[in-house]
Length: 505
Ligand code: AHR
Image 1 (cartoon, rainbow, N blue to C red):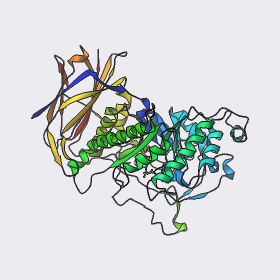
Image 2 (cartoon, protein in one colour):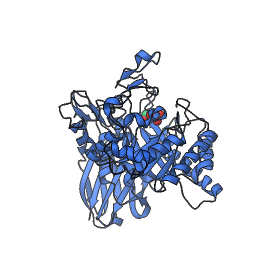
Image 3 (cartoon, helix red, strand yellow):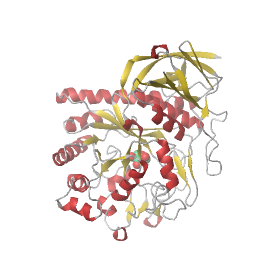
Image 4 (spheres, protein in one colour):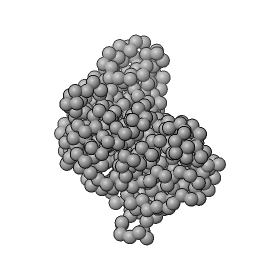
């Protein structure tokens, strides 16, 4: 059995853990809204048609800010379609996902749902088929208290107080040729700057997110960030990052190293943002909103995928992007959370994409049950235990040679320390594919600590997953055999596993 040594020093402080790091994303896509969160005929539905079983799971997941309503969807969306009396709302073709959008759920309904799950809204404006004027209309409708045409319309629609949305996305993935209204970096940068300038004139309290690259593999990556920030630096607060990972062609080692890819991506975007800061001679720092991240089997043939050949094929609430997550996926997912925490001085907001049914930790069947996918567990546990400040962990591990990323450490970890609450947590991933390992973590600098919780995500079958028929096949287990002796925390970790240990003193 091999031993990996690590040490936690409270002095290797990264920064305060922002609650917004544990955000989510709800898009009008597939069965996310319809039969996901909203299903009036469901046995658990409340008076507004929201599934209570899903509300309970979202609360358990512990999600801060939720990005809405897209995603690719927002680039063709008319927000006005989703407000006012439901019976007069139009049915539209959603060109992004070849679906029928009934607009039964819009801004008011989504805000009501968020109140039930205890999360805040992060709203995206359409800079694909629309522009500055429509973004201003939406901001007026949402945030102006009253006494203007659109704020009074909101009040007529039953919402007296403003929605007070403080974080806004300036479009979505505008670098992507698939995006409705796709632009090059100069054109998007100018459009985003004009819109941001106008939005801040109306409400200077808001934070704005400029679109970064849709992935670090985009041919324009780097140049896109440089150009967009050159135009927008003065007006925006965040640049976005999006990244999805998947096991390709059985290359498990490269997949397990996805966190290393995320680390490098973040470092590159931080460098681009700081370069733009120097050029702008600004004292402001633009941070990262990692507002789409997850495992997504984009390259597997999806069930019920649209063929995109005719209008008659547009469906209401089709089954799209309903990935089933395995233990292996969840271990990688846990390592992505480690990477986000390690960068929380600059990644101050993040959104897991997505929340229900669509590449999601929560699945539902229409008229049937809701259940947790394997990825639910690392998210819920990290969101609950990561408190105080994030602390870098000194990891002395071996290496694994990967085809995609070269040699990478075969284990990784990050810690959080809350001095006021006298608690700390350590999050560890074991990437080694054979044998059990002992992870020894020197936590003596924290003082005389006790173990208060120890959780393990692992399974002999790396491809085990939860399904409607077997919703509890994968759960979070107790980490058996964990000890603390003379300040050394010892974790016996099986191959390909993720663990979280909470300490107190
Ligand atoms: O999350 C699914 C899709 O992925 C989003 O709509 C889009 O922004 C990204 O390409």
